[in-house]
Image 1 (cartoon, helix red, strand yellow):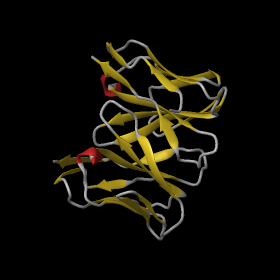
Image 2 (cartoon, rainbow over the protein chains, first blue to last red):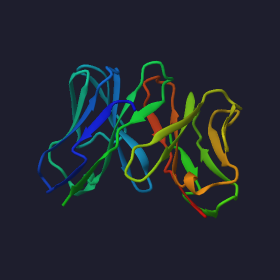
Image 3 (cartoon, rainbow over the protein chains, first blue to last red):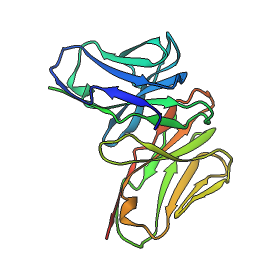
Length: 114
Length: 112
């Protein structure tokens, strides 16, 4: 158990509304990631963080922003949700002592945008 | 842009059969991981391969990294219903940031 909690686990919202997903970790890991998972696409990186207030874009960052004001929390925000952002969102951490690429994932947040 | 092509995308077999899942790319990866995911849960790391030609075994699962570090395979011997799930390969480039490129995934169903 890597101590990762995602909230909310399920959310239904309407097009144009803002949405924030939260990832909380309890073990002070430096690196945190947000991925989205869609059928036929595997997982795709949205944004990642390598420390407090240090973030960078992934391959599908358009329409998303992130913030990391403290080590334990990494927030993903959809400023104005669209139907194309309906997906399952996974937070992940890279645990200390593990090789790069060895990520531990949360249980996911299923977002439906109507 | 780095891509990982995973095949087959779906596999339905009987208990006791053997199977192989392939993960191919035209890009070189510094490491490659295999994950397994069950419905409603996040992916769980199975193995990491780093060296070209490397072979790792995890009980009935055998993982191989290609000599050129562009491809990998997962072979399951005598599959069991408990092996049912989504198998994902993921590669990391040379950036050392943990940014992974995932294959599309292989959904495996093992029928008793």
